[in-house]
Amino acid sequence: MTEQMTLQAALEREHRDIDGGIEAYTAGLASGDSDPDPLIRAMNGLRRHIYLEEEFLFPPLKAAGMVMPIFVMLREHGGLWDRMDALDDALARAADAGAMEEACTELLRLLDEHNSKEEPIIYTQADETLDGEAGEELKAFLESGTMPDGWVCERASGAA
Image (cartoon, rainbow, N blue to C red; front, side, top):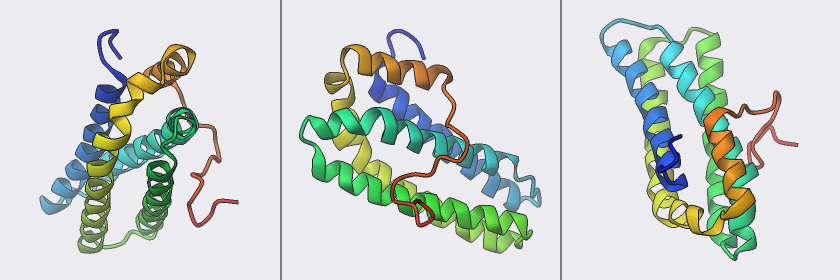
């Protein structure tokens, strides 16, 4: 992340990268290429992205009074997480290309609905609310952080 890039811009860029990976996979399916690597990278990126939001971004925003918007984001994260788990299962059982394309299209639809709320409501507050240490921690994680093994988002069906 460059010094001039805002948290908002960096988080939105991650959204585009994740969407792009899913779109690359579905485009490959349409042309007969079933290489799952773009989808796997996108889902790993999305899981990491959800982790950084729930661990670094949401707590200070919630403390600043954004309780209901954060509640909605957490609920939607759970749905996205469950959808990724279903896609993992479909990949493991070598589901046919049509089923994979349909599942990816649904994931992209859910991401679009989620991001269309998250970007203008949550991300616009990131740089202002996460000043000082909290902002620096998030920037450092965006640069090179990894999600802990076994971490599951708060509202996923499999969460404890």
